[in-house]
Image 1 (cartoon, rainbow over the protein chains, first blue to last red):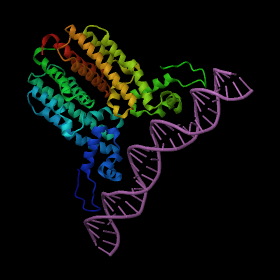
Image 2 (image 1 turned 180 degrees about the vertical axis):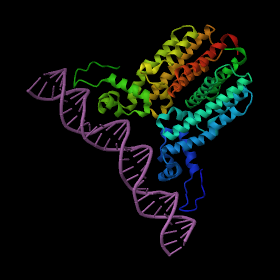
Image 3 (image 1 turned 60 degrees about the vertical axis):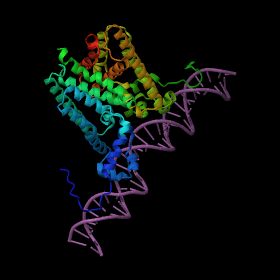
Image 4 (image 1 turned 30 degrees about the vertical axis):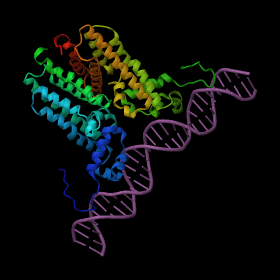
Length: 208
Length: 208
DNA sequence: TCATTATCGTACCCGAGAGTATTTTATCTT
DNA sequence: AAGATAAAATACTCTCGGGTACGATAATGA
């Protein structure tokens, strides 16, 4: 499908795709996708504007590609935690831990690019929006499967799975937004704890 | 301070401030503040661009003024519910009811302009940001006071008030975002129910 | 060697949007 | 009636950002 047969012909390409993607990722993530222009990225990477357009087609195309990178970098790990069939409390701890890592120490921007893009999807192009929605659904599915799994072990309250999945998704979004607004990570973690421990507290105690 | 002595002198003003504010409010609210230009508002209201600038000073000034209107329209009612010293469950029901009203029936856009602006504050001017922060703090204070009150009646779990306030704020934001993403109001309401009933479920049952 | 191919990158186009210079006009003051 | 005042609105300016035209260039293939 994606054939790069080292198409020997023509002038060899010098554009550093990964560099552009990485730079764009960090810029979008830290400044918000709407506040970074193609020219900015060109200046930061040394790439030429037509080069970037040749590679990604459009602004929309670049954002979509960056979102793909972000997915494998910060969304998939969340899904992995959910699918790693472990005791529910452990999974929750892992989720909280992942979300409230010390970003500054890791040189990673605060907040979540995916959450930010969702909040600004009105300003994004069609392909980025499609990708956004795919990721949203896959996350929601992962939450759903995880919740079902936990329920089957009696470790999750009797809440309709789809509702609970939306709830968890909302907590993730809320946490990422708090982090972005400058709330300390340990505070965010404490909010997440009361939020995510809730559906498991009710597991054995409350029926409906 | 804000003296409008009907300054009898000069050509009388014909610009309809309220019309501009109302139009801008609905536009920002439905399309997102970043997707509405001053020119758009001029075209919709028949106002002239210099007229708008004379009245509001700048884009930032207009947005700030609109946010003020929005505050009294959609934020203050929430605060009023919180301050209306009623049984905690009643307050929760009122909050959920207010947030999940049928907007289309009321001719009101989905979601919350305040929440939207918070998510896009990087694209807003300084005075709008300041106002945004003031509203954020006053809301947080209102949540805090309400939680303290509920606690004093034994109707709220033993969670640090500031953490609980952030939690409630996050639920509000989450609900408004869900609504905007097209999730049906009754689904949003069900998510809010499990979210907001949580801290009161633990009130009498769990100590820590 | 010379055509072919495909990328490179400078210099541009174009539209949108914030903000304003300027002239007119309506009302008040004297 | 003649200034004085302030708002009206047209028609700009200026910048920014997405996107591209096009000649130059570096490789391959015959």
